[in-house]
Length: 57
Image (cartoon, rainbow, N blue to C red):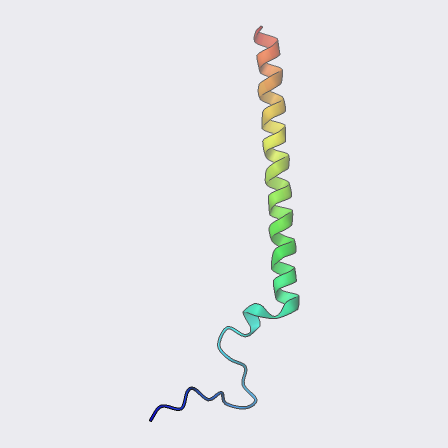
């Protein structure tokens, strides 16, 4: 008869560190910085394209 899985004491479950609060927060903050940089790059590209458009017209 199967009684479910038992965890070994003193040893965290597989993947446990992945979900630690501090690590999740760190990853989310890094992701936010990446998105902000990408947004800045897109804004810069748009302004350059608009500038080129006004120069050619």
